[in-house]
Image (cartoon, rainbow, N blue to C red):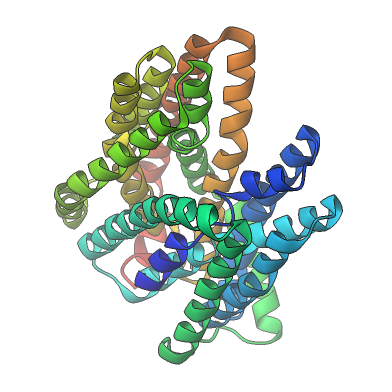
Length: 393
């Protein structure tokens, strides 16, 4: 988990990709296409790597994906032909968030206590936020002194170091059934996942809730620029949101762990967190000053912390042991989908109705997530599948 947080702290590839593309003097259409290609790769990579973690082992997938990252990221920072950059962006996107489904599966494999799993989920999210804050600060400093190419080499070096660390420290694991049985089991896993309504309702809730989360990085700067505020003002919103995460993570993680230990349903918390995120980030569409944007960014932080812990807890409940990687990968793809959807929704809203329509559509996403929690709760309550037994194995 520490290694994954450090890799995220050095994860300059996506946050600074638009600046890298700006160096190439590409057309707006080409830039948008390449950014979308990275998001598509991210989406597909979560599902494929999650399934591979079940089929060939957690350690092999983690090492392989990090080594692939170490090879492709320097290319992304050096290539200049649009087609070559787009291909490298797809590959880089596929392995950018590779540790997420693998580590989720490892935690589910090794930790049986609900409270401990909830606590680990909370601290994973904490580490991700700290890493993201470090990415912005270090990336801005390095890009201004040594150039953007250094960021991609640094990101690659961090991934390579993490791969070597995993290779040395993580015990070798094997899939449950090798050979032809693994192929049969793989097809069965896909069928189970494809027909599991609980998984897809959880996916929909998470996507709706995460669109405002991604909005902190995609929608908010667009709104602030439209309001005539400088880039430094947006920087203050990031500092304030990072500080809020640091302050709230410890008490909220402890509270969520206690709820998990009592095996209290996390669905109501997931619904509330979705509403908080939609209303919090949506209020940015009504803001006019830097302070108001700062408040809008910070209001949604409690919902952001809760949604990751609650969704992970629910995912653990419904996941069969032989498909933990696949389920984690499918759920992990919600973040990539949000990265694709958030700027599209914000751009359309801003063009068609201005900041107030951005506020309405962002809040509507949060409301949609909360409403989808109702059928999810009913399915979990009335489910008599073996998933209740899976949790105790």
